[in-house]
Length: 275
Image (tube, rainbow, N blue to C red):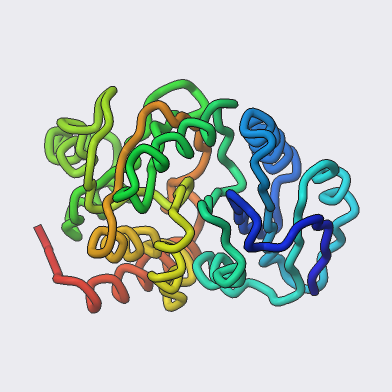
């Protein structure tokens, strides 16, 4: 099922944005979309289109969503069920703009975020993917850039109690690239988070989007490593967001299972690093 509110051909769009949702928290999603609205207003008259891909079961009711989306050029894609984050994003693969933003429904961005991202991409034509500076809702800093993960690092970060994490603090900080990710642009982090990925549209298409084998988790690891082979990735702290997600271990057994399943796919595709 596709619902449209569009005024221009896809090839005319300077930027496209894809937000994948699943039984969304409407208040959180509204905050995300309002921050997106503010960021796009700063870029006017840049042509932009928003895709909402709804992985919720059945045929969801979207009157509430259409009300929030007034003023956007948008398309809602729904009725396909939970096909996974990567496959849902790939539904718009043939319709991306010159720039394409993969955006989580729990991210709020500063008003100047997209404007600064676009400027950076324009000034650096070899950059295929921008990752932002990110903060938790309490104001503490998130580290979206990662070195290549050892299984031990993933278990520590995702499942270990706080006292064990404290014992291995230096190791985890190195995994999160805290020695390099500061207040200046950093080039070529091996892995960046999927919560906010500002791609050059042609790069996203050349990659054929996400690997759809990953239902949830690790799809951003995979696409980061593949992006690094054909273009440069840049951490740009002038692009700032607040991200409320993460913490797979706290979300229940289904999420832990998906994390383990995706880890198996990842480490049978890429070199296994235990420690």
